[in-house]
Image 1 (cartoon, rainbow, N blue to C red):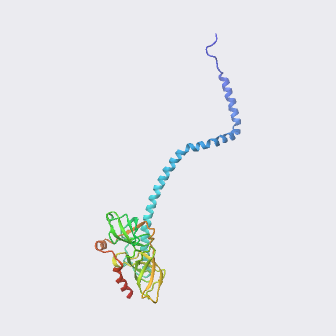
Image 2: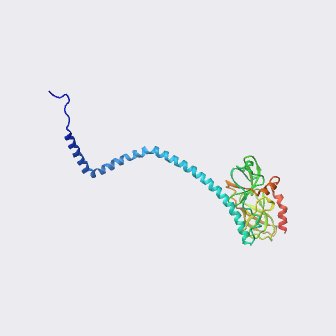
Amino acid sequence: MKPIFARGISNQFRLTLAIILSVILIVANGRLDPVRKSISSVLSPLQYVANIPGALLDWSAESLATRNMLAKQNKELLRQQLLMSERLQRFEQLRQENDRLRGLLGSPVHMDAKKVVAEVMEVASDPYHQYVVLNQGERTGVFVGQPVVDAQGVVGQVVQVSELTSRVLLISDVTHGIPVRVTRNDVRLVVYGTGVLDELELKFVSKSTDIRVGDLLVSSGLGNRFPEGYPVARVMSVIKDDGQSYATVTAQPLAALDRIRYLLLIWPDELEHSQDHNNTPVPKPSDVMPEAKQEVSE
């Protein structure tokens, strides 16, 4: 009687076949490398395509995190740069006083003034007035007449304040004047705006006044508007015409008025702030002109 199921390949045959195939693969392993490389080359594009979604997600997450981190670091570094630049401007003033053997005890420069960084929101479109609008207002404590500087020097002063914004009149405006002194010899003068961003003028300068091209002009502190020692401008030309009563002196502001973005609002000492800022009008050229004439005559 025949069995219902036919008998298959014996286990001994299967073992022998497996051993023979293993020996063949071991011997041929070295010769299969070119074939392996060819197959890998063919499949490589497919692997890259399969990895694209994961790589895009990783790149997007990393780029977003890096961008946010860089933006925060850049903003913080810019804030620190403005603060340090303001301190360096004060230190330059102290160095000049030390060079003249003046003691720091009686120096009018104060190192503990309050400062706040503000961002420019708007630039004046009126060709007859030069001002910018900042994103700091009464809520921050900004007041009319408050001095404003950047990393290089004096920019202007606040002339209008709202709850959240403030308007700053630039030193280049024709209605703006600021008392200054020459760091080389302490000659006191007044710098006026000309309506041109990169040009200022010094009016009523006597021909005998010791002023030269390249002289650095810093705020003198007269009028209790701008603290003493902040760089304002550098003298660019001095013309002494025999047909004129006064010398024609032009200067270039140190602050980059045509590309300002972040500015520094300066608070005076609490005593000065409480006494002066509430009822002090914004100085105009007409206000400081008699003082300039008196200094020149001296």
